[in-house]
Image 1 (spheres, one colour):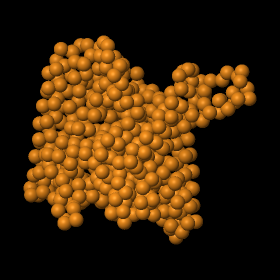
Image 2: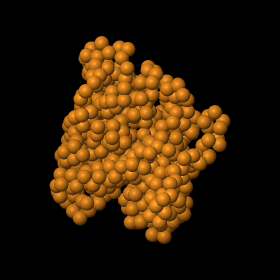
Image 3: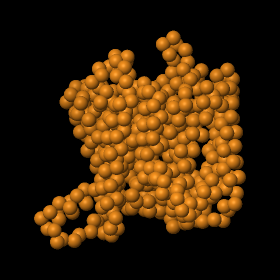
Length: 519
């Protein structure tokens, strides 16, 4: 294990994170309509955070100064990716702490400052694209300065784009860069549209940035401010879901804005390699992709089922309203964005159950979506069909086929089934831990039946592990995660968000002692 090389690369990443905070500073200036009274804390909090990032980056690069020209192998790539996300979470929390950002008002209407667990939770939620929040007063600049609010959305941008993709796009690094990208990018298939790694990273980055800019302009045309347009563009394309308003997209009360964001949520969860082919005027690649077609079929089928159930249950009288709110919420949950236009926790049980299960689907591999991914379900059911065939035809040898091509990898069946097993195990363990940690008073003090505890905790685990954000009950669309004990936020929910973003193994392997042993 080349620890010096790991330190040097982590140092560069720390400097990149600190340098990116410059983009949040202008929103504290009077030229953007902000007042010094409210924004000075945010401005100096960001400046202090930049200094901390600079110091951390400088120290790490000093320790790794003798590693220039050395090769980066598989183990080092995994270590750099896993540790960089942990480091980004800690450094990303600095602006919240140093600015004195407040999470809520207490019973006496006094501000409650974010503690260590709150800051780490909010930072992990931003970078991982989860969108779960403990902030209850987003529209009060006295509690949450606008510069900090922009940084909060900017963490979506950095995490959605991918720390490693940004790193490789800027520095290249050849085959080592490819190893870093493949380790970080989610999904079992990470085929690049271009053989040259740095150019592939730039292609990914340009598509991501292009979608952000286009959505920003479309929202601005519809009357949304530049600040809100940028923040919601970051949250949409990164499938994060952070909003600048307590009531999320519902605040705008505009069908046009909702449909615009719906379209971009769908695009953000499409394989970026296919979007790149679309830019090259090769639409057949996109339309002929099996995963993309199944992705749209699932989305349309579930949306139709939810809309019909909303009408039959009397949740909406108008088919137009049922279609508008039902479609948006299905797309938002399936893409793991988590934006809301209606409190779906008030809908009928069938719709709520469907949305809860939909959290475990996600978008396409090679997109900004979290969760399990459509491609894994396709492969899982193909493997299941072959295993069932072996029951009555044990001598038949047949390869799993995907997109008309046989997949020869002998480890494929084990990898796919093992991943599903790991997700189930993590879900159950985290659910039990959350139920054990959280006192019943969390529900009784909020005038909620304590019998809801099991379902609410299950939905909180599902929403954070799959990168959705809002769940059911105490973490529903109109609620947040401020209710939870600090142990739950720090030891359970934060780790679930990071595990979901890095698809479990990259983070878990860091805690295996043998991983760090040897050269």
